[in-house]
Image (cartoon, rainbow, N blue to C red; front, top):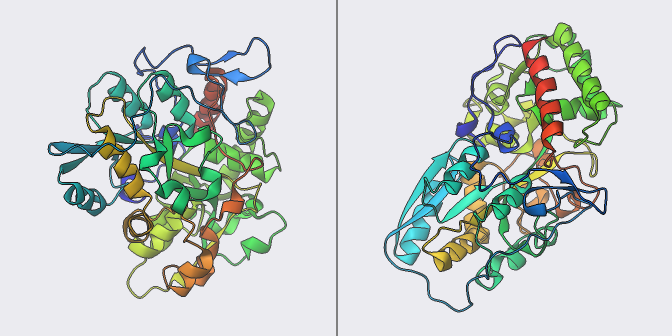
Length: 425
């Protein structure tokens, strides 16, 4: 994302009271309504498998989960509701307002975007009925929790033909929501390294272990950054050591990642932020752990006039060794416009609508079949040197690395470790 992720850079001993959007996506909040906070994680009695609220197993790329339905989907062939206001519940600046407005014009309803600051806040407000929304953004690791709390309405895919027509086959029935009973994909992104070619002398992509650049960056001290996200920062340290169990709850593994992050402090005094789309573009940082969508955001929104995009580079590991994530949209259980809500999800997956939202505003790639690195380059949408910010269906699969839910004990382990890194303890 772009503007909603704007946070001031923070020093190691100056922890901000705000948390990054993507870290917020994964934080289990203590304020979640009791209806949602069913026993969060227990061990399955018959198999060594972690389960979450409502007895729903915790999904993994190699362990798909079919979510239960607590009501039947709406019938096929119904006419969309007319009049009133249609409400989209989302992060600020994570969907082009023009997209929502045009949808309203098409179906003859007023539209509005109601915003939240974190998925915890969104789930709490939905559970307490403090907001009346028709559709909401959500992330894969929180879908089961929302389903267990009966906060989402099951989908009738007859109303959403664009899912199979336009979206990657791997996401027609994703591992976290087999049969797409509740969700459709929205955007996706990878994690890698962004840098300034006019400042960094190494060809990072050609290093034996590109992640090692962070531990060999003495000459860039003060211009190095790490993503302000517990799972991403510690996960990067794990990948540096060749440990790809990024959902590990092993104290030794997390402790080693913490030690490695702390070892960076005297080397390069890393800034901890999520504004690399701006700082790399403006040249106030030269080397930064980065999200692919932010590299595109840097090009379309933040490069100073006259600065060629060739000053930027991005590296991400090959398939199966890169962290890849996606966000979703779903229909709230409280909607009074269920047919229209289905049509909105289908609208978001329209080739032209989805592409325009991506290329003109959000910067994070939708999983459209029509998007390829070659086409984006030939259409002059992205520069050739950043073609690897574009993902392909082959990047997904049972061997893909995706940050998913942890047990409360595991979550506390990661959060406590990260707090020690940020505080410099």
